Structures are given as structure tokens and as C-alpha cells.
Image (cartoon, rainbow, N blue to C red; front, side):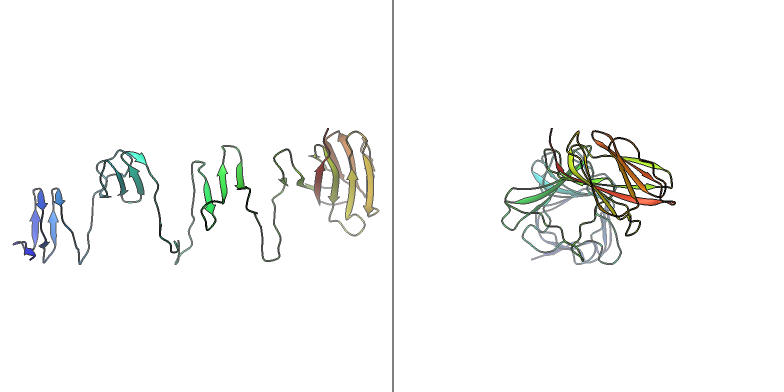
Length: 274
């Protein structure tokens, strides 16, 4: 039978060991340690007011589940961590299934810091998609048995300026964008790409110019527009035109002489090799 503690309300300013089933029928404040070897059932609020930090080697964190020398969960005022005998361990959220949600009422953010990885596994737990940071670049990879599909409302994948879609050996497609005021010149490194297309977005007369670079022997293909001029290795510098030329073996130059600020998008693709 439960034993009722004789205090109906008050404070206990010494350590207390509880080995049986006790019922406290009012608020109690324990100012020392409480060691419970049986079950603890609280019908009201359990409030832990300790302010110690939870860490791998801490002893003053206010809440812990599990033995200190084995796997345990530690919680302080703003941290939840899994520890295995002083070493960081895996924290499992809804390990047996279910949805984990964040920010149901107010928008927030989820951050992964310190260059760690984010892995999304398939239903079998064998294939995965991994996002990581190596200190210089963000990297996204998938195991060999799965495809990575990008979809949107219109089926488009939107890439930022000066971006690329590359393979491990150097790339298949790079995309660059230049915003040039009138009479301004910009350059883009296209490397060994065999085909370069430039879209000026000006009008139907200067909408597109295409280049096939073929290393040291560039071939110019003018596919659309009359307000474009091309020079193999020198600026044609024609007023009223978008002027393109190959200023080095791997660099395309663009000079805007269309009369106002224009944006040029350069697509370079199909690695030519050496």
C-alpha cells in the first residue's frame, strides 16, 4: 500500500531516499538530493530549476535518464543530448515511426551546424541521399542505386548565377550571368567546353548567339539576331551590338553596346577535353 508522507506541504532540507511507493498530497520542495529506486508518478508539475549545462562530462545538468556510465539522455534549459559514458551518442527521435514536426504555430528554422551531414534513407535503410559541407563547398550525393529527382510547380530547377551542373571529372554544364551597363565589358571562364550559347534577352534581333569553341579553332554559329557581332580573338566593338569574342583559349568576353544595361546569360556545356 502507498505510504503517505506525513508532511502535507513543506520543504525537506536534507537528502531523501525513497524505496517504496510514496504519495505526497501537496506541493513539496526538496532542497537536497532525492534518490528514488522505485517508480515516480507525478499527477501535477515536475519542475527542475537547476541551471547547470548539459555536456558530455557534466554532472550538474538538471535532468538525466539512464546511467551515467552507459547510454543516457541529458537535458538542460535549452539542450537535449544523448551520451554514452562520456561520449556523444545517437539521439533517436520517434525511432519506431511517426512524424516529427516543427513550428506548427509560428515559422522558425532548422539549422545543421559545424559542417555535419544530413542523410535521408530509403524505406529499407540501405540507400540514402546525403548533404554535407567539406569546409569549402556544399556537397550532395546519393548511393548508386537511387536517382535524385528535382521537381517544382512548373517542373523547373532554378540555379543561381555562376552555377553549374557538373560531373566528378569537370562538368557538363555551367551557367553564368553578366549584368553589363552600356559600353561595359565582362568575361566568363568557359574552360574546355565545346559549345557556348549566349542569350542577351534584348529582343528578337539580339536574342541568342551560339559559339562552338573546339579549343584553339573556334567556329562561330550565329543562330538568331542581327544585333550581335563576333570576333575570333579581338573585340569587334560594333556600336548598337552585343559584341562577343574569345579573349583567351578558355575565356569568353562580352561587351554591351546596345545602349542600356543588359543581362547576358552564358551556357557552356559538353566538355571538349584536351
